Length: 279
Image 1 (spheres, rainbow, N blue to C red):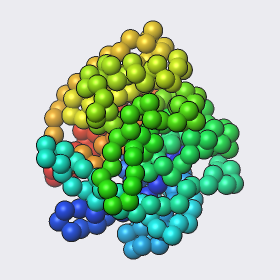
Image 2: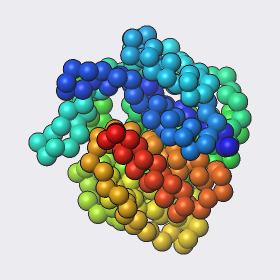
Image 3: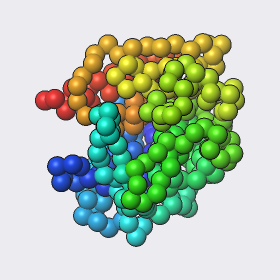
C-alpha cells in the first residue's frame, strides 16, 4: 500500500440547478487513491463556509488532513459553453497553501492545484519535506487565467512562467488534460511534443483526451508517443476524471507498474467512476 500526500485546494462547486457541493483535486484524487489501495494524507486550504466544512469532513474520512485556513474557499460555477463543453466561472479565491512544517514521509507526492494556490517553488519544498520517491503533477490549475467573476481561460504555454517550467521539469510525471490546450494545436501528439520541448527529458508526460483515452510520452521507451483509446465510453459527467486518472496512475507506478500499465490503471479508474455515476 503506497503512501501518498496529495497537495491542492478544496473547492466549492456551484451548478446550474442551484445546488452546491465540495470538490477540488484533493477530494477527487483522494477518493481515487484510496480506491486504488493508497494510504492517504492531504494538505489543503479552505475557508469556513458550510460546503468547505463538509469537504474537510469528507477528506478526514479518506486520511489525515492538514488544512491551511483561508478567508474564503476557491469557488467555481459550472456552466456550458455554446458547444456544450464544460465552462467554469471563477467566483472566489482561497489563500496560498504554505508548506509549513514537514508532513510525514511518503512514497508519492501528488501535487494538484486548482487555482494557483500552490506556487511552483512548493513542488521542491514538498519533495524535500516528504522525501517522496515519486512526484506526480496534475498541472491543470497552473495553466489557468483566473479573474473573479469571469470564465476560466487556459493559458498559452508561452504565458507559463519560468518557475513553473522548472518545477515541471523536476517531476517524475506530468499529467495535463487536452482541454487545457484550447486555442492551441488540437493534435494531442503536437501537444505532448510542445510540453516535452519545455519540460526537458525527465518527466513521463501524459495528455488525457477525455473519452478518447490518453497520449503517453515515456522517456524510458525512447520517448515513443502512444495513443491508447478507452475501451468503454460512458456518457456521464466528467468532473474529477483527470484527478481520478492521476491518482490511480500514481498508485500503480508506486506499486511497480510500468508507465503504460499505470496509465491503463488510470483509464480503468475513470471508467469505473463514470459508470458509478449512472447507477
